[in-house]
Amino acid sequence: MALKRRTILGAAAIGLVGFTSHAGARAYRANDWSQLKALANFRQAGPDHERFLKVTNLVWSTLGQKSQALEVGLFETDAVAAEVLIGGKAWVTTGFLAACQSEVEVAAWFCQRALALQTNVRGEELDRNALKAHLASGYDPRATLALWTRWASSKKLRNSSRFTDIPRTSVRLGKLRVQIEKLGYLF
Image 1 (tube, rainbow, N blue to C red):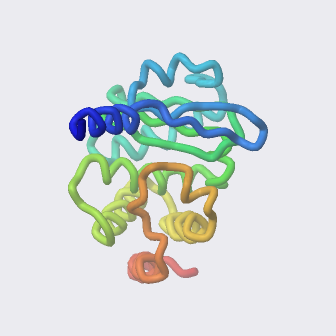
Image 2: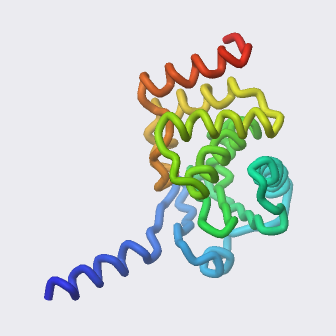
């Protein structure tokens, strides 16, 4: 009986988990890329998709990955959600792009999330490595601090991804700020 319960709970955890925006639009989080692509509001074209693709391709190549191995998608919904999946698949919602406020902040999120999937590095070391990747991609690292500071204070952003290893405590944010200042950037 205990094995059956674990099996059922495991299957439920792997299955689709839905979220609803205030506008009533619906999208699904899934580990199966083909299921995501089949949803009506999933897009792989258009200006928002092209901007997301540009950012992710730049970061992806900075991380030493082949751009053709990256596939990105966009859900047209006000819901704030995003995910990077193992195997070079990433999706965001138009609501997430708006919440990030700029391509630079989207790049900061993607650096942190992609590195967390590729390495066993966590915590402050992940923050430092993501900051280095963000800078190596040609972005202003101050946007990293702006994003994570806003993320720490916004429940909507914090709940946008199952990924939780981000600098959202005052200690980690302070250490990140020191790292950015050591690079010669002033606030």
